[in-house]
Amino acid sequence: MGIDTTPTDPNAPLAKKPISYLNLAIGAGLNIFEVSTLGQPFEVVKTHMAANRGDTLPSSVAKTWQRGGVFGFYQGLIPWAWIEAATKGAVLLFAASELEYQARLLGASPAAAGILGGMGGGIAQAYTTMGFCTFMKTVEVTRHKDAAAANRSSVQVAREIFAREGIRGINKGVNAVAVRQCTNWGSRFGLSRIAEDVIRKTVHTDEERDRKKALTPGQRILASALGGGLSCWNQPIEVIRVEMQSQVKTAGRPEKMTIGLAAKWIYQNNGLKGFYRGVTPRIGLGIWQTVCMVFGGDQVKAYFAKRA
Image 1 (tube, rainbow, N blue to C red):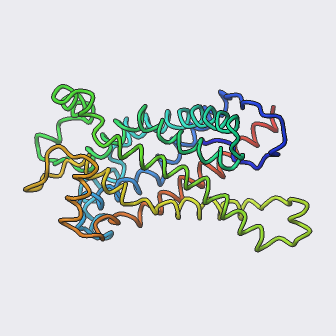
Image 2 (cartoon, one colour):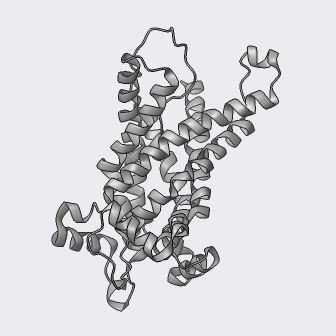
Image 3 (cartoon, rainbow, N blue to C red):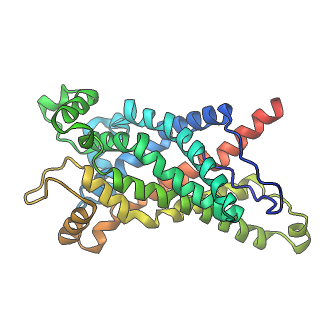
């Protein structure tokens, strides 16, 4: 899930929001639904393009299909994407709620505290569950699938990497993941709220705005989609993350990638355009994730609230 970004009264007594186990379960369920439907296909194509920066979107789709037909678009779903989906929402909600409360204690406005909480929650996601899950999903998409490799399961590959390189080995690129998640959630919360304000000022009269008339479900979906799509401005960070975790073998490529070395390697081989490979499927992914988690989350929570 995320943190509650509904506008609040700045003069209301400050109180920490309780962690609801129902909200944690809803977050996990929605994350699993999101990744099991359109999320993982977008993720696979985006990762392929970021790792193989000479491929176009059509050729990336074609090569993904050649790897396994429909199932090729779901590489890394089980168990890594499901583990990530089932845990990252809970981590985000818990960490963001605590950080938002502490920011309010220090005098931040509700909006600023919400964005800061989202950024901190995104970082917490990366260093708890998303680091190794994202790495293993990338490994599944980019590792060479010869006859020998085809008989090795994803879990076996993870064990081999852990035995060879330890905990750092299965967390390659985690710093880039942290930067991505921090900017992702800060942008999604902020840009979604800006989109809501623009839509409200465009379609509502002054009287309706004074009455704080709520947006329709369609308008809220549009705002979420705009927030999710526009948050992909940080695509260079995502390409660097994929390069750090990629198993593609290229002559001259540094074995141990830092964020700086990865950025230098991408620029040397692909120029500035290389930092934006895979942005189109990532926009689709960002829109789908935000609609599921922001709009979908609100709808599911409202449904259970009525039944309580």
